[in-house]
Amino acid sequence: WIYLNSSGLPRPAKMLASWRTEYCEQMRLRDNWLSGRCVVTRLSGHKEAVNCFAWSGDVVVSGADDNELRVWDLERDPDDACTRVLVGHTGKVLCCCIVRGMVVSGGEDKLVMVWDLKTGKLKNAMRQHNSAVLCIETDGYKYVYT
Picture 1 (spheres, rainbow, N blue to C red):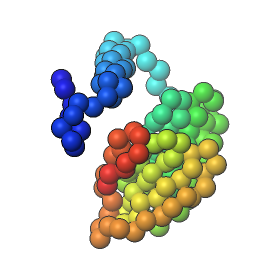
Picture 2: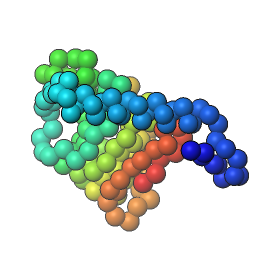
Picture 3: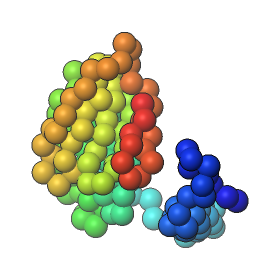
């Protein structure tokens, strides 16, 4: 495969290597899941249904109908894994992602919110949508798409 940027030139090899690494990791996880070489852990904390989650390393972020995001540290005991609750949405949290040390969330309240993953502080709240924000994706480097 050759990936082209907007000028028609091939993208740097770093992008191709990153894609290959991610693909191999996903296949390893799939194989472990299908063969039963996995650990299932129950994390309790949300008061209503969970709609989304994102992970990066040993950190998982979940968003739910209770209007909250929760940050979980998978290295900790499951009963004490919730390290932070991010409160700011006024409607259900419908989507989230983690990018460059930030949590980006979208919700029923038409807001896209950007949080600092380490401190839990709200960095930005943007109301650019006319209806609920249903999906968030990132290129992993700079851009977030809603």
